[in-house]
Image 1 (cartoon, protein in one colour):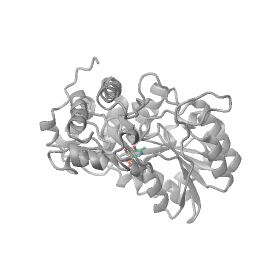
Image 2: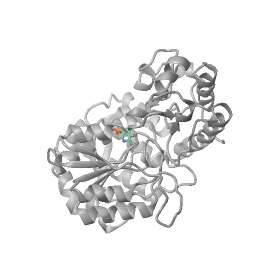
Image 3: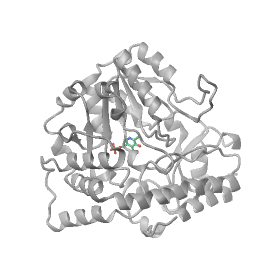
Image 4: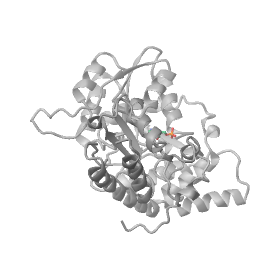
Length: 388
Ligand SMILES: Cc1ncc(COP(=O)(O)O)c(C=O)c1O
């Protein structure tokens, strides 16, 4: 790991007032909520300091700065051409998806998700009065016998689409597995969407955090069919740790989905965080060097976790993710019951997310967006606490 930036020690992190640091008592090591422990990117911090210095805390302004910054980043990073005119500002990805769903589904319509997946996906579907239909990820061998890790179950998706689903919530990269969907699966998904008339809402919030060895493919870039049926939701909130500042974008690449975005409230911009827009513009325009350092730490941590588990908890199953800072760990062979996260919190004072939240018993999600020493302490606490 070549990173030079200083990750604050735990005593300093405990000064933070965000959800990660205020949800649990002081003696708990918090590794659930998807926030990272790293210091802010310098250009982001500078932009925010400048705003505070000038008491620049009013409403977000109707300028093209955010759209241009997102488009510049997408082109530079993924070779994806976004029309800045199509980038619509919302407060966060959750609001963007809910407000889009409101315009494309009627109460009782079905919306498909692929568990294990970010828990609020099902909340968002229910929030608009639609029904959740599950097409879980699969590990079954491909038709030619090739065995691959977990991936989209295209057959299950086709069955759900054929039964009249109205929309699919694609998580790309997929939280909690950190799975980066290969282009061929996204192309096939777009063909199914086109064949059955299903909108694909691609939550691409973790895309800036794709780790070495994997290549992120933006859904809207894969085909004309993807453009006709797709919406992309992008923000800097995971990549640059800006979740509390509230700014995100909805991107479309065809008049058909665009017309639903055009029906959004004209007031949406004023519901977006002004500081969020300022920070996001700085992150997308000038945050690449910082992100490179973060990816280096995350790359190191995903392997460190594998080594720590192999040495201390060999029965736990974990495959290092291709993206982001989330580890999906299978504790079933350890006999720790349905909810190992509850047991670990109780005995080891380490907070993880329960697998139940993603529809899976015996699993837990761990956030390794932290110093390697914190990760080591977490596994040491778990193995040394008598939980084993
Ligand atoms: C896949 C995914 N989508 C959305 C969110 C939340 O994003 P926002 O705060 O912009 O609504 C998260 C947060 O962890 C996430 O993992």
